[in-house]
Amino acid sequence: MNIRIRELCNEDTGTLAEIEAKSFSMPWSKDDFDNLLKHDYCFYLVALADEKIAGCCGYTESCKEATIDNVVVDERYRGMGIAQRMLGELIRRGEEKGVQAFTLEVRAGNAAAIHVYEKLGFASEGIRPGFYEKPAEDAVIMWRRK
Ligand SMILES: CC(C)(COP(=O)(O)OP(=O)(O)OC[C@H]1O[C@@H](n2cnc3c(N)ncnc32)[C@H](O)[C@@H]1OP(=O)(O)O)[C@@H](O)C(=O)NCCC(=O)NCCS
Image (tube, rainbow, N blue to C red; front, side, top):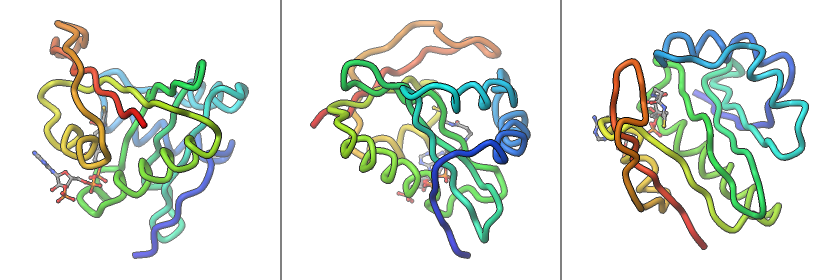
């Protein structure tokens, strides 16, 4: 399977909303993705598997710190290294743009995501108790610093 990573564009947002709806209890909508494209401080990448949209990740930047707000891979394409490829590229391009540190929050029970983030150099720096709803769960706060 050919995997390609490129920047998010308008044509992607409907498909991403469908992937979100299958992946999260509180999914982002098409409008949420459309809004990202209006702001310079948001930077998003999509992964294409044989030219079909397989997932996305991105960040919001402020003062050289980037908060990764969304990472998702369509369930049909999980376990193929796509999240690691996308996030590696997001970090590389972010650093080129001057980002010095990346942070994110993840459900404490999301072992697959935590494994991916640790492989990419993120480390836990704290817990936000009861941060998530549907179902209630703690958030692990992770950082990747230069
Ligand atoms: C988390 C997610 C983005 C990972 O995407 P992916 O493309 O399948 O990830 P990759 O294939 O790059 O890597 C998955 C890694 O997790 C590992 N893994 C899978 N299930 C695991 C588990 N239950 N516990 C620990 N590690 C696990 C895999 O072995 C692999 O690691 P490896 O390359 O060292 O073998 C995807 O599962 C997803 O979209 N989940 C739903 C949305 C979500 O939870 N997003 C994160 C929100 S913070």
